[in-house]
Length: 100
Image: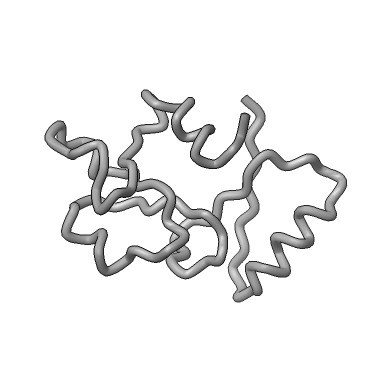
């Protein structure tokens, strides 16, 4: 599994970064931005407790994941959004983000 990461310590315009990455010579399958809550791209909301979801939810959240999955009673959907453990349901994750 080839993986890459870019860490930036300065403020940037995410839309400009996405355009730059798309124009790069690298063929990117997917781009993840961690800890952003108001992106205009499909996102994964990672939370620890169900009570954290509603305040962080927006129209671009396509799935919920994170430490919340350690609780075996976590439902498979919360507020009509799938709760997915990508270690167990990677195919569902790929379908959601059209990665196949």
